[in-house]
Image 1: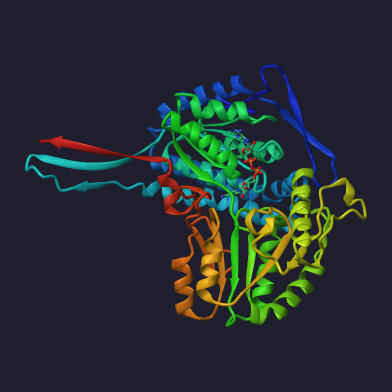
Image 2 (image 1 turned 90 degrees about the vertical axis):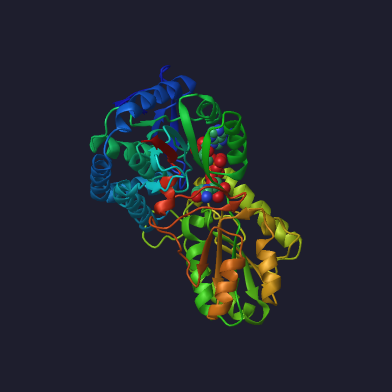
Length: 475
Ligand code: NAD
C-alpha cells in the first residue's frame, strides 16, 4: 500500500494473493488493508490537501506531464503486467496503457483551464466573482476490467483540480494499481497527495469512504448494485458522488447499412476485453432484411477468434475474470437456448489445451434472441453476441431504450437524418454512429439512468472535482 508517501504493509501484516486468470498461477501478493489503513490514508490525504490545494495550476500540470512521460516510458512493462494479471491480449493491454496515459496528458492541460467568471451585480457598489475550488479529499473505488485507465481517468482530473486522493483498486488487479502509484511516486508528488489501500474484502473500506467526515467525494466505477448501495450511504452524509456503472448497449443495424461492414464493426468491439466492458454491445438489433448476411459475416469472423493466454501471438479472446463470470455467461446462453435461441457459433466453455485451468468461454453468436430471455435484459460481461431482428425505426428505438441502463449505444446507417434522429432519441450517454469506438480522454464518458451519475474525461471530467464558489464584494 502507499500511504503518506511511504510504501507500507497492513498493520497486522496480512496479505492476499493475486492470480493469473488464464491459468490460475499465483503471480504475487499485496497487503490486505482494512478500516485502520483506510483511516490513515484519509488522514494523510486530508493533511496534504492543505498545501496541494494551494499549488498553482502550472505546478499541478507539471506533475501530470511528468507522470505521463513515465507511463509512456513504462508502457511495455505495464502492458505485460496487465495481461498477466487481468488477462486481456497484449495488444489490448498496450492500447489501454496508452488510453490511461492520455488522461494524464489531457488533464495536465485542463488544469490550466479551470476558469471562473464575473457576473454583473444588481447594486452599483457590489461585485460578483465566481471561482472553482477543489472539492477536497476524494475517495476512489476502481474495477478490474480496465485496471490502469480507470485509475488515471479519476486521478488525473482530481489532481488537476487540486484534490488529494485515497484509492482502493479491485481485489483481482491490485498489482496494476501498485505500478500506477509508483509512477505518481516517481513523478515526485508530495506525500499524502495520492494514497493506495489494497484489500481483499472491499465492504468495510467502502463504508469508511462514505462515512469519514474528511472525505468530500466518492468516485466509483463498478456494478450498478454496488454503486447504488454506496450512493445511498454517501447520501446520508451528503457526500458528492460520481458513479460509472453497468451498461446494456444496443447495437442497431438499419436496412440501408452495409451488413458486412456492420458485422465487422461489432466483431471488433463486442469481443474486446472478452466482452468485459461497460460499453460492450449487448443487444444486436439487426433489420430483418439483412440479418442473414450480417450473421454470416459475424460467424465467419468470430469462428476465427482464438482463446488463450494473452501473451501468446494470435490470441484475441482472453479469460473472464473468474469462475462466477463464466457461470453467468453459461447461464444466460443456456436460458436463451432453452427459450428458442439458435447457437450460430460457440456456446460452450473452452477447456482444451490447458484452458481448463483458466476461466474461458468460447466467443459466441446467438440468433433468434427474444425479449423473454435473460440476455435481453441482463448485462452479460462476456463474449456473447445476441442477434435480435426488427422491422422499423420507431419500433427499434423504443426497444433499444427499454432498459434501466443508459451508457452506450451504436447505430449503423448511411442516412444522415436517421442518424440524427437516433442520436437524439436514444437515452444513452454515448452514441456511436457508424463508429465502434466513440471514446477518448478528450470526450465525456458516462451514463444516464442506472448507468450512473456524472462524466469522466473531457472538460466535463474535471468539473466533478470542483465546487463553485461565489464571492460577493461590497466596494
Ligand atoms: P463490482 O461493483 O463488484 O466491483 C467494482 C469495485 O467495487 C471493486 O473495486 C470492488 O472491490 C468494489 N466493491 C465491491 N463491493 C464493494 C462494497 N460493498 N463497498 C465498496 N467497494 C466495493 O463490479 P465488477 O464486477 O468488479 O466490475 C464490473 C462492473 O463495472 C460492470 O457492471 C461494468 O459495467 C462496470 N464498469 C463500468 C464502467 C463505466 O465507466 N461505466 C467501467 C468499467 C466497468
